[in-house]
Length: 246
Image (cartoon, rainbow, N blue to C red; front, side, top):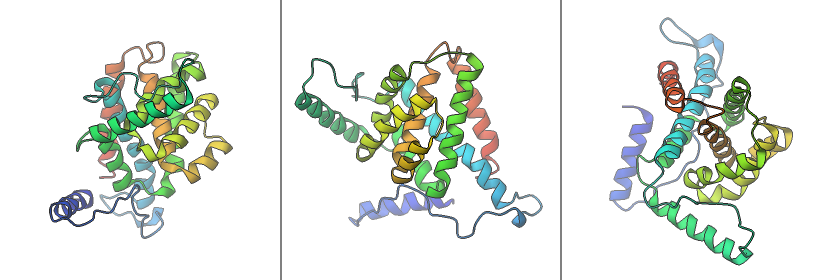
Protein backbone atom coordinates (compact mmCIF):
# COMPACT_ATOMS: atom_id res chain seq x y z
CA UNK A 1 0.00 0.00 0.00
CA UNK A 2 1.41 3.40 -0.98
CA UNK A 3 1.98 6.23 1.46
CA UNK A 4 -0.79 8.37 -0.06
CA UNK A 5 -3.35 5.55 0.27
CA UNK A 6 -2.32 4.83 3.86
CA UNK A 7 -2.73 8.50 4.71
CA UNK A 8 -6.18 8.66 3.11
CA UNK A 9 -7.31 5.61 5.07
CA UNK A 10 -5.99 7.08 8.32
CA UNK A 11 -7.79 10.37 7.60
CA UNK A 12 -11.00 8.44 6.94
CA UNK A 13 -10.68 6.58 10.25
CA UNK A 14 -9.96 9.84 12.07
CA UNK A 15 -13.02 11.47 10.50
CA UNK A 16 -15.23 8.51 11.43
CA UNK A 17 -13.97 8.60 15.02
CA UNK A 18 -14.33 12.36 15.33
CA UNK A 19 -10.63 13.14 15.61
CA UNK A 20 -9.26 16.31 13.99
CA UNK A 21 -7.74 15.74 10.54
CA UNK A 22 -4.69 17.89 9.77
CA UNK A 23 -4.60 19.59 6.40
CA UNK A 24 -1.30 19.53 4.55
CA UNK A 25 -1.01 21.40 1.27
CA UNK A 26 2.37 20.04 0.18
CA UNK A 27 4.26 16.80 0.58
CA UNK A 28 7.05 16.50 3.11
CA UNK A 29 10.54 17.33 1.95
CA UNK A 30 12.71 14.28 1.17
CA UNK A 31 14.79 13.05 4.10
CA UNK A 32 17.91 13.27 1.94
CA UNK A 33 18.72 15.60 -0.93
CA UNK A 34 18.12 13.74 -4.22
CA UNK A 35 21.43 12.69 -5.76
CA UNK A 36 22.78 10.81 -8.75
CA UNK A 37 24.77 8.24 -6.79
CA UNK A 38 22.06 6.19 -5.11
CA UNK A 39 20.77 4.43 -8.22
CA UNK A 40 21.00 0.66 -8.50
CA UNK A 41 20.15 -1.99 -11.09
CA UNK A 42 16.49 -1.72 -11.96
CA UNK A 43 15.97 1.56 -10.10
CA UNK A 44 16.81 5.10 -11.11
CA UNK A 45 18.69 7.45 -8.83
CA UNK A 46 16.65 9.67 -6.52
CA UNK A 47 17.80 12.72 -8.48
CA UNK A 48 16.56 11.27 -11.80
CA UNK A 49 13.22 10.33 -10.25
CA UNK A 50 12.97 13.84 -8.76
CA UNK A 51 13.56 15.39 -12.19
CA UNK A 52 11.03 13.13 -13.92
CA UNK A 53 8.52 13.70 -11.13
CA UNK A 54 8.79 17.46 -11.56
CA UNK A 55 7.26 17.02 -15.02
CA UNK A 56 4.87 14.19 -14.19
CA UNK A 57 3.25 15.88 -11.20
CA UNK A 58 2.69 19.04 -13.25
CA UNK A 59 1.04 16.99 -15.98
CA UNK A 60 -1.23 15.26 -13.45
CA UNK A 61 -2.37 18.63 -12.15
CA UNK A 62 -2.93 19.83 -15.71
CA UNK A 63 -4.98 16.71 -16.51
CA UNK A 64 -7.23 17.38 -13.52
CA UNK A 65 -7.72 20.94 -14.75
CA UNK A 66 -8.48 19.69 -18.26
CA UNK A 67 -11.10 17.32 -16.87
CA UNK A 68 -12.73 20.18 -14.99
CA UNK A 69 -12.63 22.44 -18.05
CA UNK A 70 -14.42 19.79 -20.11
CA UNK A 71 -16.96 18.48 -17.63
CA UNK A 72 -17.31 21.32 -15.12
CA UNK A 73 -18.83 20.58 -11.74
CA UNK A 74 -22.46 19.90 -10.89
CA UNK A 75 -24.28 22.97 -9.65
CA UNK A 76 -21.57 25.51 -10.51
CA UNK A 77 -22.62 28.40 -12.76
CA UNK A 78 -20.94 29.03 -16.09
CA UNK A 79 -19.87 32.52 -15.02
CA UNK A 80 -18.11 31.31 -11.88
CA UNK A 81 -15.54 33.78 -10.56
CA UNK A 82 -16.01 36.14 -13.49
CA UNK A 83 -14.33 39.58 -13.32
CA UNK A 84 -16.28 42.54 -11.99
CA UNK A 85 -18.77 43.82 -14.57
CA UNK A 86 -18.82 47.53 -15.52
CA UNK A 87 -22.35 47.88 -14.11
CA UNK A 88 -21.52 45.99 -10.89
CA UNK A 89 -20.79 47.85 -7.67
CA UNK A 90 -17.91 46.90 -5.39
CA UNK A 91 -20.41 45.65 -2.83
CA UNK A 92 -22.29 43.51 -5.38
CA UNK A 93 -19.02 42.13 -6.72
CA UNK A 94 -17.85 41.18 -3.22
CA UNK A 95 -21.20 39.52 -2.51
CA UNK A 96 -20.99 37.52 -5.74
CA UNK A 97 -17.46 36.38 -4.90
CA UNK A 98 -18.66 35.18 -1.49
CA UNK A 99 -21.49 33.28 -3.14
CA UNK A 100 -19.09 31.70 -5.63
CA UNK A 101 -16.80 30.66 -2.78
CA UNK A 102 -19.68 28.97 -1.00
CA UNK A 103 -20.70 27.12 -4.17
CA UNK A 104 -17.18 25.88 -4.78
CA UNK A 105 -16.63 24.75 -1.21
CA UNK A 106 -19.94 22.87 -1.00
CA UNK A 107 -19.44 21.25 -4.43
CA UNK A 108 -16.01 19.80 -3.67
CA UNK A 109 -16.29 16.00 -3.48
CA UNK A 110 -13.82 13.15 -3.11
CA UNK A 111 -12.47 12.15 -6.50
CA UNK A 112 -13.26 15.52 -8.06
CA UNK A 113 -10.63 17.36 -10.12
CA UNK A 114 -10.27 19.76 -7.22
CA UNK A 115 -9.40 16.98 -4.79
CA UNK A 116 -7.13 15.37 -7.39
CA UNK A 117 -4.97 18.50 -7.54
CA UNK A 118 -4.85 18.71 -3.75
CA UNK A 119 -3.87 15.04 -3.59
CA UNK A 120 -0.99 15.46 -6.05
CA UNK A 121 0.37 18.45 -4.15
CA UNK A 122 0.03 16.96 -0.68
CA UNK A 123 1.31 13.50 -1.65
CA UNK A 124 4.21 14.12 -4.02
CA UNK A 125 5.13 17.80 -4.41
CA UNK A 126 7.28 19.34 -1.67
CA UNK A 127 7.56 23.12 -1.60
CA UNK A 128 11.15 22.90 -2.83
CA UNK A 129 9.87 21.43 -6.12
CA UNK A 130 7.21 24.05 -6.84
CA UNK A 131 9.30 26.63 -8.70
CA UNK A 132 10.78 24.07 -11.09
CA UNK A 133 7.40 22.42 -11.64
CA UNK A 134 5.65 25.72 -12.38
CA UNK A 135 8.48 26.80 -14.70
CA UNK A 136 8.30 23.55 -16.67
CA UNK A 137 4.52 23.68 -16.86
CA UNK A 138 4.83 27.21 -18.20
CA UNK A 139 7.34 26.04 -20.77
CA UNK A 140 4.93 23.29 -21.77
CA UNK A 141 2.18 25.86 -22.37
CA UNK A 142 4.52 28.24 -24.17
CA UNK A 143 5.43 25.44 -26.57
CA UNK A 144 1.76 25.08 -27.47
CA UNK A 145 1.78 28.74 -28.44
CA UNK A 146 5.08 28.49 -30.30
CA UNK A 147 4.05 25.40 -32.26
CA UNK A 148 0.72 26.96 -33.27
CA UNK A 149 2.03 30.46 -33.95
CA UNK A 150 -1.14 31.80 -32.33
CA UNK A 151 -1.24 35.21 -30.66
CA UNK A 152 -3.24 35.35 -27.42
CA UNK A 153 -4.49 38.55 -25.82
CA UNK A 154 -3.25 38.56 -22.20
CA UNK A 155 -6.42 40.20 -20.86
CA UNK A 156 -8.72 37.66 -22.52
CA UNK A 157 -6.39 34.87 -21.45
CA UNK A 158 -6.36 35.81 -17.77
CA UNK A 159 -10.11 36.46 -17.82
CA UNK A 160 -10.83 33.08 -19.44
CA UNK A 161 -8.71 31.25 -16.88
CA UNK A 162 -10.43 32.83 -13.87
CA UNK A 163 -13.34 30.37 -13.61
CA UNK A 164 -10.91 27.46 -13.86
CA UNK A 165 -8.82 28.79 -11.00
CA UNK A 166 -11.97 29.64 -9.05
CA UNK A 167 -13.28 26.10 -9.43
CA UNK A 168 -10.18 24.20 -8.37
CA UNK A 169 -8.03 26.53 -6.25
CA UNK A 170 -8.86 26.71 -2.51
CA UNK A 171 -10.65 29.96 -1.77
CA UNK A 172 -7.98 31.09 0.68
CA UNK A 173 -5.55 31.36 -2.25
CA UNK A 174 -7.84 33.08 -4.76
CA UNK A 175 -6.52 36.62 -4.36
CA UNK A 176 -2.90 35.64 -4.90
CA UNK A 177 -3.94 33.31 -7.69
CA UNK A 178 -5.67 36.11 -9.58
CA UNK A 179 -2.55 38.26 -9.33
CA UNK A 180 -0.43 35.43 -10.71
CA UNK A 181 -2.90 34.83 -13.55
CA UNK A 182 -2.35 38.35 -14.82
CA UNK A 183 1.40 38.22 -14.28
CA UNK A 184 1.85 34.95 -16.16
CA UNK A 185 -0.50 35.99 -18.98
CA UNK A 186 1.49 39.18 -19.49
CA UNK A 187 4.81 37.30 -19.45
CA UNK A 188 3.52 34.54 -21.76
CA UNK A 189 3.98 31.96 -18.98
CA UNK A 190 7.55 32.95 -18.15
CA UNK A 191 8.24 32.87 -14.40
CA UNK A 192 9.63 36.40 -14.06
CA UNK A 193 11.29 37.77 -10.93
CA UNK A 194 8.03 39.37 -9.65
CA UNK A 195 6.18 36.10 -10.25
CA UNK A 196 8.94 34.18 -8.46
CA UNK A 197 8.67 36.48 -5.44
CA UNK A 198 4.94 35.80 -5.31
CA UNK A 199 5.57 32.09 -5.77
CA UNK A 200 7.73 31.98 -2.65
CA UNK A 201 4.92 33.57 -0.62
CA UNK A 202 1.98 31.84 -2.34
CA UNK A 203 3.10 28.52 -3.86
CA UNK A 204 -0.39 26.95 -3.96
CA UNK A 205 -1.88 29.96 -5.73
CA UNK A 206 0.99 29.98 -8.22
CA UNK A 207 0.55 26.32 -9.16
CA UNK A 208 -3.16 26.84 -9.75
CA UNK A 209 -2.64 30.02 -11.76
CA UNK A 210 -0.19 28.37 -14.13
CA UNK A 211 -2.34 25.26 -14.54
CA UNK A 212 -5.45 27.35 -15.24
CA UNK A 213 -3.70 29.40 -17.93
CA UNK A 214 -2.24 26.37 -19.71
CA UNK A 215 -5.63 24.62 -19.53
CA UNK A 216 -7.34 27.58 -21.17
CA UNK A 217 -4.99 27.23 -24.15
CA UNK A 218 -6.29 23.71 -24.78
CA UNK A 219 -9.75 25.12 -25.46
CA UNK A 220 -8.53 27.59 -28.09
CA UNK A 221 -8.83 25.95 -31.50
CA UNK A 222 -6.13 28.18 -32.96
CA UNK A 223 -3.70 26.89 -30.33
CA UNK A 224 -4.83 23.25 -29.99
CA UNK A 225 -6.82 22.20 -33.08
CA UNK A 226 -7.60 18.69 -31.76
CA UNK A 227 -8.17 18.91 -28.03
CA UNK A 228 -9.07 15.26 -27.53
CA UNK A 229 -5.90 14.05 -29.24
CA UNK A 230 -3.74 16.53 -27.33
CA UNK A 231 -5.21 15.48 -23.97
CA UNK A 232 -4.74 11.80 -24.84
CA UNK A 233 -1.11 12.47 -25.75
CA UNK A 234 -0.57 14.23 -22.42
CA UNK A 235 -2.21 11.42 -20.45
CA UNK A 236 -0.19 8.78 -22.32
CA UNK A 237 3.04 10.67 -21.71
CA UNK A 238 2.20 11.01 -18.01
CA UNK A 239 1.42 7.30 -17.70
CA UNK A 240 4.65 6.23 -19.40
CA UNK A 241 6.89 8.56 -17.42
CA UNK A 242 4.95 8.00 -14.20
CA UNK A 243 6.19 4.40 -14.11
CA UNK A 244 9.60 5.75 -13.15
CA UNK A 245 8.42 7.71 -10.11
CA UNK A 246 5.46 5.78 -8.66
